[in-house]
Length: 308
Ligand SMILES: NC(=O)C1=CN([C@@H]2O[C@H](COP(=O)(O)OP(=O)(O)OC[C@H]3O[C@@H](n4cnc5c(N)ncnc54)[C@H](OP(=O)(O)O)[C@@H]3O)[C@@H](O)[C@H]2O)C=CC1
Ligand SMILES: CC(C)(CO)C(=O)C(=O)O
Image (cartoon, rainbow, N blue to C red; front, top):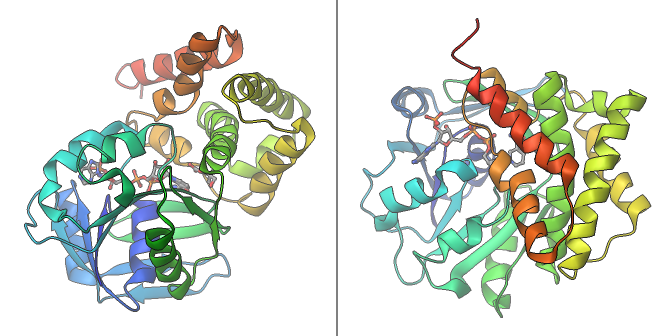
């Protein structure tokens, strides 16, 4: 199969490299140096046990330059760039192209559905953690399931995607209730990503400090109120356990939002905590903690150019 990975950063390199064992993979990115490095040397993955794997069969090209339609595209740009990346790469999509988003944040599937048939959109989340080391190199710092599903009656295309990912070595779970999966991942990201970005700590620290864990609980409980107003119910203890488990399994890794702050680029806050705040308004649910975090993260972005 011909597969395009739109966004050849940390996660794109992980999924693209593994998929390239059996398929033709085209890594698409906006950064010329990243594209050149992948063209010259392929993708290098440092696994948690210290082993290094090289994937040289991948191809790479700059966003918008490939005109050849693909069978499957996986979107792995930050939510902030979804619209731009889809518009630039719309020629990759033919009638039958399946487009899968494994990005964090709410609303990416709706943006994709403006370019392909809604039944061809696969929504998912990934419990893997990857850290971008630059020049086509990543550290694979945490493993876990890839949950996929659809908002439509799309069993056939979900099965195709599940087989593809399983064959590449990913653990795949097909979700009957994709809304629950999206909300679950939001609960992880709205606490883990923001805490690690603000404190610049590895993922595991949040469960090692009582004040840090209290921060997480307040954000998670508040978001659960919004999820429930929207029709998705959570057992609070189970929800916290799910967040705790991510902090354990990816404990030595660094969240994508941590990496964004470190690289002084825009963080995905509007599609994560910001999406909760916006949805809460619809239901009249108060969200003072999440509102505060959105403002704090934007204030941190505002200071990028002010200090060394
Ligand atoms: N890292 C992780 O552990 C996890 C991340 N995620 C989610 O996966 C998604 C990707 O994250 P991650 O891999 O960390 O992000 P990265 O920033 O490492 O990678 C995103 C890549 O997309 C590129 N890009 C930006 N705009 C475009 C465009 N118009 N066309 C093509 N490529 C473009 C970026 O280039 P440039 O550098 O020039 O901007 C960058 O190389 C996010 O939604 C994130 O939240 C989910 C689970 C875990
Ligand atoms: C917290 C983590 C690693 C969970 O998979 C994640 O989604 C991210 O870094 O954005």
